[in-house]
Amino acid sequence: MKLLDGGEVALDWGIVQSINQSNEETSTIDQQTLPVLLILTGITGGSEEAYCMHLVMDGIFSGYRPVVLNQRGCGGLPLKVNAYQTFQMVFTAVATCCIMACIIYNNVINVL
Image 1 (spheres, rainbow, N blue to C red):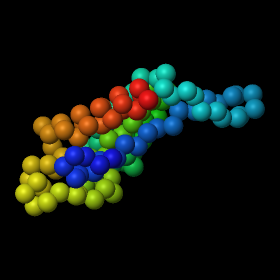
Image 2 (image 1 turned 120 degrees about the horizontal axis):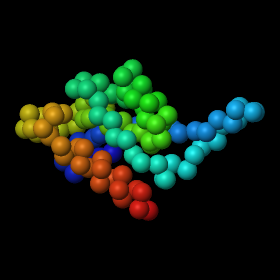
Image 3 (image 1 turned 90 degrees about the vertical axis):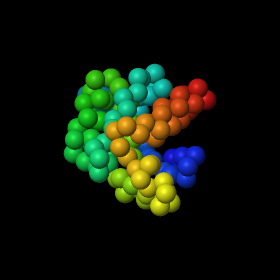
């Protein structure tokens, strides 16, 4: 997802499926009805980290639609900011602009 300042973040959604125990068929659940669980990665991690995968599974089993936010420069994403922005716009716990952009994006997608 491209941000207004040229940076990029990625949203990796967990897929919620239902398993029919009698014939072991799977079907995708209507995910629009489930509450969203936003999972934030550690300072250098991405959605491929074991703790994120465990949180995704726990979220699915608890009735949520989990999504992992891969911050700029993490999880295989390029760090797309110029030298002046690098100090200001890399991931920190106090910079919430990327989180807010993802929440706004999710709200817009769920309305459409």
